[in-house]
Amino acid sequence: MSLDMAPSTESISALTAITARGYGGLRVKWQLIGLGLSFTICTAMPALAVQPATVDASDNVAWSKVVENPFDGKIVYDRNYNRGFVFVSSWSKNGIGVTYNRVGSRLIGYDAGFGYSGFGFGHRSRGFGLGLGLFSSGDPVYRYYLTESVPDSISLAIGGKVYTYTSGPVLPELATALATAPSGNIAIRLIWNDGKTKDTEIGKDTVKAWKTIFQPS
Image (cartoon, rainbow, N blue to C red; front, top):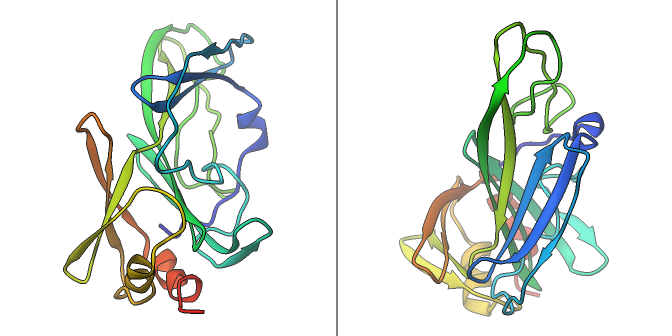
């Protein structure tokens, strides 16, 4: 999606990140609110097929626009989110990166005064971020967290045909399909080896950027 927004520094500083490698070959990351604690759990993990996106959703980048990257050349970054998930992807001839974050919450109690209430995703004048809020007497207090994973493959529905990508440089057939994709949003399916799938979309501005990035050399 074309969601040109910037991170909230004060909100990001309120997070403590806990990262675990494992969980059926997925990279899983939990971000907790204001605990003042951190720890890491490390387990063996097989090599990923699809690589994670090269940016995070809160990064201050030119979303859905062609930019030059010293490692990948021409590249475009896309993100799509709602209350339940945050989906970030990066697209270049060298490869496609995808990160899927599920947003979860847990009730941790009720507060009798005013204070910090957690974070949420939405439109703000400063852009995408983890926003601060106030709660009044008796309001429930929730802890929000992100569970981050990388699918094993992705499928794109373009021009009545389905193309699948797993790893490495984008092959000529897929590159041609991306470069000639019709205007508008494009359906994408994230696929995990355990049978789970998630359908979402790539925004029209990113689809437009594909025409520049994947045009034949």
